[in-house]
Image 1: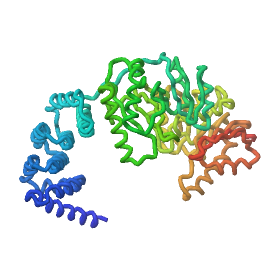
Image 2 (image 1 turned 60 degrees about the horizontal axis):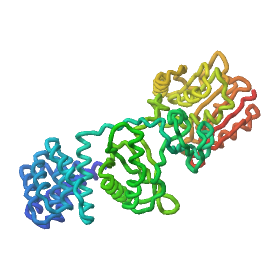
Image 3 (image 1 turned 60 degrees about the vertical axis):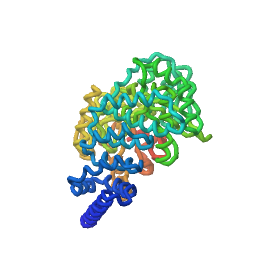
Image 4 (image 1 turned 30 degrees about the vertical axis):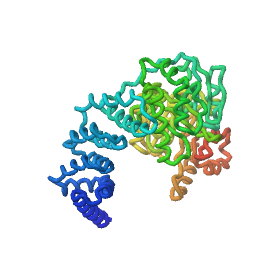
Length: 508
């Protein structure tokens, strides 16, 4: 392996030397610049180029004066890739004097990789000039690319301050994404009259968002905006419809402060990645232009997300996500590990089992991880005491911190459950069961399930309740053949992920 890597590096160095020599000697310059540009994307090749070019590195600058615009373009991109700040002034001069629109964005791309702070004011002026001028249709593609890069550069130096959300008491149509099999659990917790299920969750007309934000069984909150519902598949038409919708009015009503609002577009479709990127860029650029940059596209510093979801008619349904609206429901969950259950799923399990939960019950989680199941169960029916056991010490440390943040008293013990003994029996066991990751683990997991159910008489009172979140349904079904256990209830949580939730009674 090392030999192959070494040979590849040597080959790369040889090619770089040959390409640079040809470029300096003006041999098929454009073609060789393109090849060199590709090679320089690898860090080893970049170092080799800088070492070989040495004092002749400045000869690249002469290429910015070549008559061939594509030579100027590729030379600029290479200078940016190299990252030498000594190129900055020359690149800036070239950008300002360039007459070919399709080349100008390449200069900006190169400048953006250097320390361009001293040109902040000048670049901001160029951005304003570009956005305030009416450009002919054939020029927009290249101008939009300039605007996109300049905007990104300005945001790098002056990160925008997010607007403050203040629209908690405004009337609005809210979409709550939920577990598709158990939308009714969230629906029942909504006090509003105007509410209904749809395929991915619940839609509700809210006049008090604070009440909805207390519900723990939805995964995501989105908003329906009047006039921005069903869109066709043309980027310019999509942007026009969004710009004419109630979007900006809504944003201003529910936030303090004026525009602009910084957005990103999330496209949910089966479109190929490169086509998806081009599609969303077109929408974003056109939306900026049509709103006179009251909406500004930013892929990293955004406060709203316009989500386009492909529908069966070939168009898109549209929803809005607000990152200005903070979801603090699970703020206690500072820590998690790979196998941790998502807190929404833990809250859903607790709600499904609500009829079986007793307040002041003595509750144990034998595979507690970071403690999410216990905390979410306690939100619905406060228990006392609660114990969490896990063999992994790091998980226990994380669980203690999570419980402390939630101001919940849980007794955590770093121990193997199968060695655990207690002075009294528990009323309830609740846990997210370890699952088989592959065939090699199946036998171990089967033994674990069998040992778990055999351990129950030492831990649980007769008539006690076992609440299990599982991914290995067959193993539970096998153990339920034992007459000491009675299945009270079973729910399928996800057919795709093969997850289930069981309520089992220990008969004794």
